[in-house]
Amino acid sequence: MSDPGALIAAHVPLGSSMYERERLDGIARRAEQELRGAGITLVRTDPVTHPNDVARAVAELSAADWDLLILNVINWIDVRAAARVALAFRERPALLYSYGGRSDLRSPQRGPQSRSPDLRPLDSQHPFHPPA
Image (tube, rainbow, N blue to C red; front, side, top):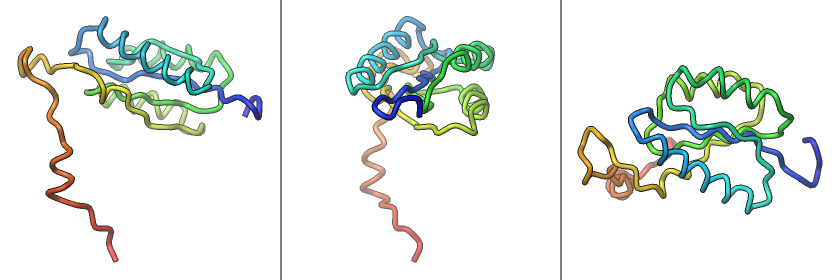
């Protein structure tokens, strides 16, 4: 850790190129405000939505000193891009975070009135029971 009293985290918002970039950027900014409000100093990069974004994000985050990688899942993500960013820093501590659960992003394939399905009812219908 760089300073025992302060956490410095690299924040990488993960999203999908299927959503409006301005909306993803806004959600990422709100997440950064929340993290800073919790006393975390951030090294930031713009959202990663496609494998073409990986080199930029890795270079930006590699240019600074930080203690923890925060992978912020904003709703749907490009798994290839997200995995490549995570693998680039596989030797560093990482936290999977989701600010996107509070978003109002809608799937363009399902139309403007749709929302991502709420999976909470599945939890109550199919509770997890760890193996004995």
